[in-house]
Length: 353
Length: 182
Image (cartoon, rainbow over all chains, first blue to last red; front, side):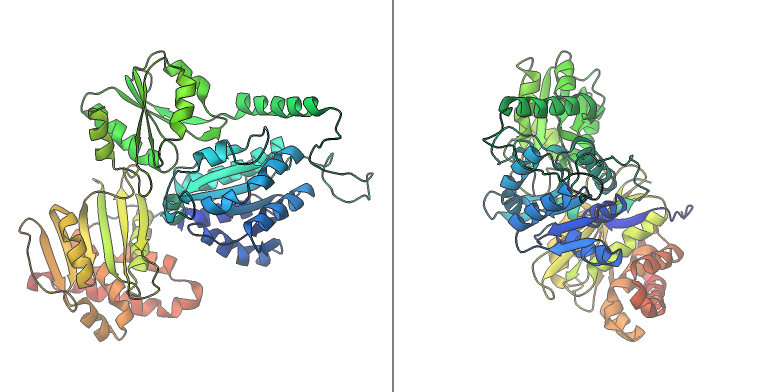
């Protein structure tokens, strides 16, 4: 029974995986205020960052955290904050400003139940918050959604890279299930190139003239040009960075669409449907912004139906409907909050759709 | 290997999350896919707490499954709570120091062992959780002592390494507990 032992992997919680990956990605500054179900991130970094002589501030509030992380990012260092649902709400003004200021940093959002104070159970209720945002004006956050603890590592690295590459805040959107569960993971060196920010970072005036980073404001005479430039950047992001996973979609009559931890059960449901002779496919957006709309539109030419499975009252389903644009029906199977519906439950609910 | 899952449950403070972490670690060392997911109330001690471990040769199909192959119940509340979640043909390993030996289901296997009492005999009641893992290894045949010892070494932090020999002893006593007399 005993097979070869492997010690390449370590068993760790999603929250610790994210925190350790942030350290390996070169995060120099962390600011945060504890909230379940992500407090382990701050706990881990409070020791590790000090050990490495990097910056750690236990902020007095999430309003402070988001403004501190903006300040750190303006100096060109990699910076991060993390929080959960009702407290990410407090950061929305800062996120709008950070997009206007083009400040690169990572926000880890480990979703719990809402609205309001909500509860500490897993949830996907902040899809809209992350992809649309509650801040003012036209802006986009890059949003990455891990589905396993290993992906918590992989996508934390990627979040740092994309934020630096595009000078835009990037959200790692996990949930209470991923944050609290343990799985074997492999850590590895940060796999992305370092981005040169010497042309804009507020790094002191030794080698260059004084610089200023500020939100574009009422006195700017190139108001429209700023927004157009900003959205040209978002278009580039959409063209280059859209990522998804798909299985058995080519011949599928019914395509199940799901993101994050919920997608694990959905993948199993797809396999069970195939065993029953139903041509089911599986589609998982990994980047929630940019959303893989183009690919879904292509698949809507051959599929007969899409079903999104979410742990919220139906949020991503809107994006799937926009992508499919009426080519075929898009249904929703959901659960308000908690552990995702079981594969068996998903199968039986699909059978009566 | 077909996918198998375990629920380890007891009072907060009995070390069920740690026992689960050791078991999950052992499966990782065997090169398996494994998930560990905790469930507990707000209490530091005294509330009920459990964790589920799912192990598979392939990707784990579901983190939190509808039914379970093995339940380890360290107290009566856990025994009562999870008895009906066990699959037909599955097994409950119960701490008979704290759990009444009643076999109300005929379609599952029972392993009653005085886990707390045996731990006291080792010299530390806190070893009950690890002792239970010895029973799990023996009854399930899915892990062995050698790999559980390595897993213990992985999980026990450096400043507690002095407790490793006692933990290994507890593991052995659980493993060597005579199942024929159950």
